Length: 362
Image 1 (tube, rainbow, N blue to C red):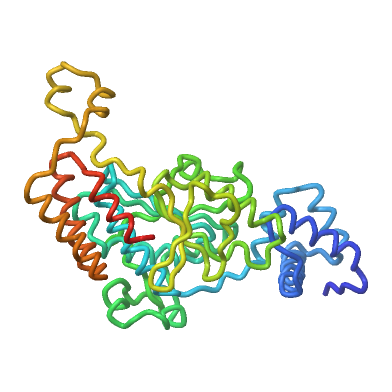
Image 2 (image 1 turned 90 degrees about the vertical axis):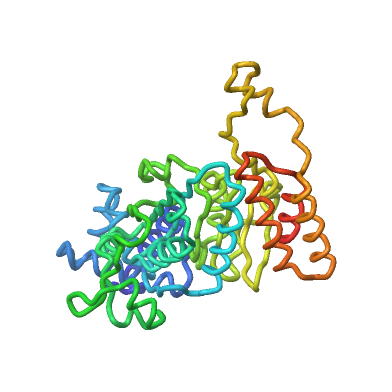
């Protein structure tokens, strides 16, 4: 049993090293969890003193990656809070209309035992993108290798399911071994890995092959020292696509400061970050007849003036403007989505429609 009276200086030193390397603060709760993790590792290695275990940490730095995850809180639940997943679904649906390619990569940082990655898989499957021949991929990274291995089994207990509606339980899970097994074959593929978000050398190759259009990064700065949120901010921004979204934990708005390329928005009481909405270029892979005939180079085609709107497009735009003026945003959004969809089908877009659509998120 470790006591801070007997090993106070050594325990404090190890706590500071853990804080510096893993971005976790030495709060009372954090210290208690860290002490439990030390005791657990010592017991598994049949060591009787903290000094003996500290010597092992100096000899084998990789032992830190087995020690610290045990101090992390791996609790979780499906669809908590549900409003975040609903807003994310709405944003992705709107984004997909203007996306240049039918591809969506989603990242869960701190994915834990799989609650978040499964919730994202369900949300994205029910969005209907894959039914429209979209390539949808979900990736999850967590420091706790044991939690990652549990998530890979997609097996959950009865207690894990308590927040999940009965209809969702029947649709997405099957009874297995006294618990519930996620029907992963019905959802987009989920790839999980163990690694330290603060240390790029531990990242899997798929994470280094960023960007990601949607990032969930929740709870990683709770109990964190002052420098951790700023470091995490740089990491998340390096992983985010030029047109993408970031969801943090409720009240955990660590992406702050000089963020000229990001915008903090709110919808239905849910705050999130958006990058580069106005940078979308519809159907950028579209090849014009002139290009196919070899009479112009691709960059010249991109600089060509946009064709005028058809009479139907003008009518839709005018009606959307009227709806906005009458504070009927939902109806205006539906009208603009129809307009942009029609334009996308013909490989073109009009800035007037995109401008109005983006104004709905301001």
